[in-house]
Image (cartoon, rainbow, N blue to C red):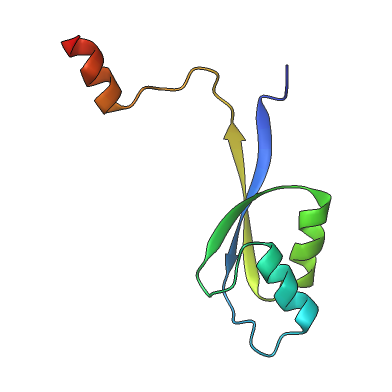
Length: 85
């Protein structure tokens, strides 16, 4: 069985890439950013951490933990259909 928890990070762009070096702008695009205020959730891996170091003056990083659930919780609409059937 795989890990129960996977470590992720939320990256938010807080400063403009105007005037940044081309490699820093490319790292922002690779991280799924490009505008101030845009956020993206990414897996916490060494290659991602390297890109974050390249643009650490333009972003904020928040760690989160996502737990995998084997039995998904049915939504309200799905449970209402089960009651009427």
